[in-house]
Figure 1 (cartoon, rainbow, N blue to C red):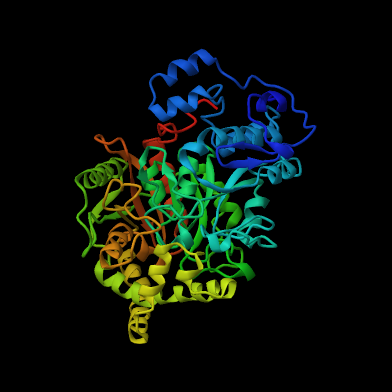
Figure 2 (cartoon, rainbow, N blue to C red):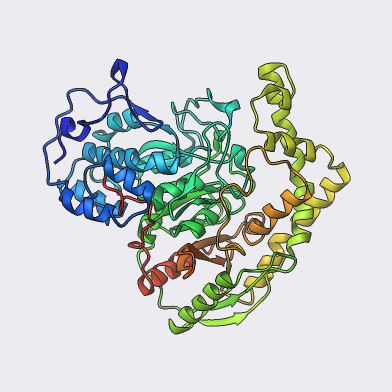
Amino acid sequence: MIGTAELRKDREIYGNGREEIGKVRYCPKQNRSVSRRDFLKSSAAATALAAMLPAQVKRACAKSKSIDEFVNYDALGMAELIKTGEISQIEAVDITIRRIEAIEPLINAITTPTFERAYEKAETISKNSTFAGMPILIKDMIDVGGVRRTDGSRMMLTNIPKENVKYIDGIEAAGMNIIGMTNVPEFAQLGIATNNTAFGLTKNPWDLSKSTLGSSGGAGAAVASGMVPLAHGTDGGGSNRLPPCTQGVFGIKPSKARMLPGEAGGAHGPFKTNQAICRTVRDSAALFSHTEDPDGPFPAIGLVERPSKTRLKIGYAASIKGGAKVEYAVRSAQENVVELIKNLGHEVVEIDIPVTQDEFFINFNGAFLGQFGALTERAKAITGMSAAQSGLLDPFTVNLIEYGASITPEQQAAGLAYLSTVPNLYAKTFEQVDLILSPVMPLVSLPGDTLTPTTKVNEATLAILENNLGYTASVNVSGHCAMSVPLNWDPESGMPIGSMFQAATGNDRMLYELAFELEAARPWKDRWAPYSIKNIPV
């Protein structure tokens, strides 16, 4: 097993007992005695591997020790090692910290590490719990008691909630140990990039020049790079589907109000749901079973463990009316999935997505862009100045507030009236088919600087956002469930291309059963990004 002294040797020690690797800081646990296991593989193998990797990876390898012995384990697999005594709960924390220290300087996925909290919690977690003390990263848009929640904003850097929301209680009851918070766009508004002036840009482990998308971009990058096999995410417009799509991992948006409340006071967000981004379907399904709301509108589905023998009628929508042109590689990937699901015995028919993108966003923006004026009042309360003068908000957010201020009450009323019809539009479609298959987004990927915290908000900016949220956002308004499944990689760029499956409200089990079937037919767990623990010794 890993000896604490050996784990931390060769690291630069700073004053007052704090260590720093990149921008991640934590306090080492004193007098921690952990027996040693054969954790390291040969340094010669690591050196040989490093010679074949990109330049930034080579630099990381030069400072590192060995390939991670546990690279191929998912969260449940690691939990089993804890339960059988092959590793301890403290070691699980040590292993995760080692990974974070190796990868984080390249990826920039974490806003607040909670390493000491994780050490303190580790041995209090029952080994009989499902995850037995496995570390998890939490998206920085939910209340964890005693842990800073920033929503990616300088305005929130001193915000420390006093108590967990119920969803976090469910995560901890499942035996997961919170080890940090992941980066998000400021108040999730940048949408297609996880970037802010408080913490900077999170980079895509498949190509550091590409966007992680958002707003669960930090969570997706943490999983794709192997920091953790499972990370929490929220989805209010595509946030648990867009980052997995472009980072080659699995993400799901549950039905509205299916999960334990993620808002203070026990409320459910109007569109936002909580769930995980994972390397394996079984990890996601296991966490799902612990975080369903027993007081919600649906009977609990419990633990889904395998595919269904039922064959489905799946409607394939190649594009969305009023949306951007779908890139050839994305269309080819979805057509490939059509053939896959046909070969699995499912019926496929062509259908239309029941909303038109341009009409949807005219009304969505009319209904909700005006709400960001509340941030102006918060900035004034803190500084006595306007949002723009306060320096507490990114220029993009300030522009969004100003843009939203031009929306009239009539536009807002018309927008709300239209959005109230969206659930029924989808319900009618699900009377014809069991599931909808479509792209997650029309493009394979986007440059990381497509939008930045200083981008001006105008019609062109909104068009970029809308084109890449066109397939996902209406799902949140409808309230039904959807998932992004990593079934293809672009042969030219090597980037992942996800496929989105949607099911009627409450039919979350159907999605999980199909996900298990697709995972068995075309496994993705062992497809690793270049900038990941598979390639970078830790």
